[in-house]
Structure formats: structure tokens, C-alpha cells
Length: 559
Image (tube, rainbow, N blue to C red):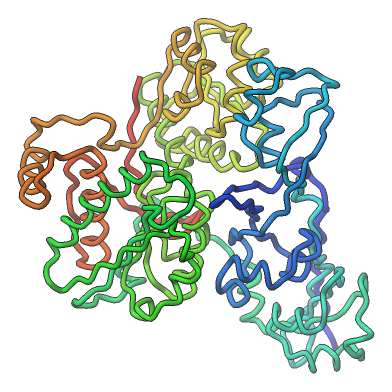
């Protein structure tokens, strides 16, 4: 007698974030959709939805055909064209430029756009733009039910076939032989049709992989470290470092980037040389016209690489991250916001704190220094920022907060009504996206006397933020770097400066110290299992259970 147990797993195709568009990245002059893989999609369905061949997607993401998992971020090449858009209510130039993958600077010479201000009904032409694709429009295989049956398999999955899917692609995805799918459904490959409901037999271990349960952590969250992932190995070690030198590149190289890369390398080499003669350091100029990242990763030395310092450009860093995950090689990235783009990757070591961890620091700052003040947490309109929003909430509602003051949770549309009632509140805006921040600064103009919590990077976004800073009591969360300024008289700097002069007969710079500190800490931590103090940079590496890998959580409050 069969025992049937149904678990309803039908997902609604559209929700409150349905119009959240896939982000567009410009990498080496080419544009890509930066897509976060969702449950139910396949390479075949993405090929159809993004109108690009499966082979092109695989070529842009080495190894993705073998490691296509939910939560992974991949690059999908995007076609460009000129797009005419009629401005609608609540749209801004910043949000539209982000939507179409073009820079705001491209409108500087447009006489119809004055100081970034646009009007409803205005016609804008976006040159070399990409067709926006919303997450809600992407085809997803629909799981109808899981059925426990007394068969040779523990569980039967009832699955609705989506356009572009085949018995072969489904067999690869669910690790079930194609012949078995044919037999249990009494069909041939040519009989499979879009919309058909088929049975897919799952072994219990396959089901566990499909439904991942995150552990509930107690007070002791330091439950893993790198030694559990990377077995201890004695030298010699092979270390790869990707830097943009633009050698042999036909384009005009940005002088500041080349200078920074050179100084970073000089500092890093000093640190790595201190390990001893057991280290082989490989330097790769990934901005050279004659090479690309995918080609570099195929070189023979990568068969036994022990540690990789990923490229400083996020697109190239993502390619390296995916390769490292497939080949089980630890890597370090110092790209701001890399945690958003590189996820579910246990090989990752993030040198810069995530925005989420910095929001946790802001919550602790509010609890400790303003225990009697009302706090208004404002949610942005960007799905990506929900992680930051929840990070602040998690600390504010934790045992770390002894106050009884309720957190007011608001949106950009209704936070004003709370400010009218509590004009001396602390306002926390949980976003570091330029377009969101600039729009919020505009909304803040009518209010005075408040305390504003945000990210130090806001100050890079122009007069709209610096003007607000003069008006409000602003507190910024920041990660510490040794540039643009540092103290030459600091004992650690003086000692390193003497060594640097012996090496290169030159004066030290902030970027040299940055390269030295990053290389010193991570080579010691990953290869030698030792903690190393930075000359100016501070590190506190912790496992990140949300995005995978390990993250430097050290950050500070500036005001």
C-alpha cells in the first residue's frame, strides 16, 4: 500500500520584487547581465530568456556547466542598442541608467537633462544600452509536489516542464539517468512537451541537496575555520596575483590604476618574500589585450596553485571565484561589495567587510551610544539591500540590545510621517547603491535636526550627500585603509618604510602599505595558519554563513 505525503511547493511567479532587474556590468568594454541563479532555472532556459546561446554563457563562466547551483552569480553577455524611454512617475536618471546599463556621465552633454533632473513624459535616448530583464520574467521550472512513495526511490518529484528543457537537461540537473525518466513517465525524448507534468525520482541524498537547511547558531558562532577546508601543506607554495597593468593594451591605460597596481604589487611582493624561498609568485596582467582571465586559468601552473589574489575588477574576480570553487583553491578578493556578487563559495576570503556586517556595526553603535533615541530603519527600493536591512534588524532585536525602544521600520514613501512624530530620531538608510542613496537624499531635504546613519562611500556620490552632511549629524560606517593618508611617524610605518627603501630605493605610499598588509595577512592565515598584524589595516576574519567563505568583519564608525 502506497503512503502519499504531499508538500505544496508551488511558487508564485511574481512578488513584491518582481520588477527587480538583473544588474548590468561593464567589463573591459563589454556588457554582461550579472544573474543570481534561482531555483528552477537551467542553462537552457537562461539561453532562451537572455537570447544568447548556452555555449556563450559557458564560455563566459568557466566550469559553470559542471557547477550550476542555486545562489551562484554568473555573467551572461548582453547585446547593446539605442533605447528610447519615456520617463514615468517616480523614475530618476540614476535608476534608469542603472536599469539600462549606461553611465549617468553619458548625459552630461545632453541639454535636455539639467543637473540630472528629468521630468515625467520626457523622452530619453540611452545609447549602447541593454534590454532590461526582470527576475520575475525569467522562466523557472515549477515544482508541483514532493510525494513519498514505496518505490525504489524515496521521493517522487512532480515537475512542470519549461520551455527549452529536455529529458537530457533534466537528467543532468536531478542526477537521474535519462532512460529512467523515460521509463517512469512512459515517454520518449521527442514526446516531452512544454507544460507537461512528469515524475522525477529522487534519492534521499538528492533531496537533501535540493533543500538546504541553514543551521541555527548559538552564542558561539566561530564553529569553523580555514583549516577545516584547506589541509595544511608545507612549501613550496604557488601564489597567483591578478593585477591590471594594461601592458600591450591598445586602449589608453588609466594612469591612476596602473600606478596603484604597481604599488600594490611592490608592497605585496615584500610581504610574500618574507615567507621564505618556498614561494613562487605568479603575476598576471588581466588587462593585456593578448590574454584573458579564462585563458590564464588554463595555464599549467594553475594545476597546483595554492592561493590566488583575485582581480580588482568584479567581473574578472567572479570568473576567478567560480574557477576556484570548482578546483578547490582558496582565493582573496579586496573588491568592495564583492560579497554581493560572489556567493555560496567556501573558497572565498573577503578582505573588505560586507555592507551587511557594516550595518550590524551601525546597529551596535546606535544601541551603545544612543540607547534612549528612537531609531527609524528605512528600507530601500532595491532587493539587494534587503540583506543589509535584515542585518541591522538582527542586531537591534538581539540580546545585545537592552533597551525597550521599538525599532520603527519604514520605507522611502512613509518614513516622513514618522519623522514628523519623532523629529530628533536616528534615521538609518540600509543601502549603499548610488541611485538609491541620491534619491533618498532628495527625500530628506524637508527635514532638520535628525541624526543620519550611513556608509562612508556615500561621500563619493557628490554634492547631494556632502550638502546633507553639513545639515545633519551624520555617522558613517567605514572599513579602514591606509590611503589617502597615513602617519609616516607611526612605528610600524617607519619600520616598513626602511625595508621598502632597501627593496626599491623609493618612498612608501598608502597603496604599497595596503598591498603589504593584505598579502601579509592572507598568506600567513591561509598558508601558514598564523595571524599576522597589519601595519595599518586591521583584520578579524570570520566565517560568513550567509554568503559562504570567510570575511574580514573589522569596521569603524566615523562622524
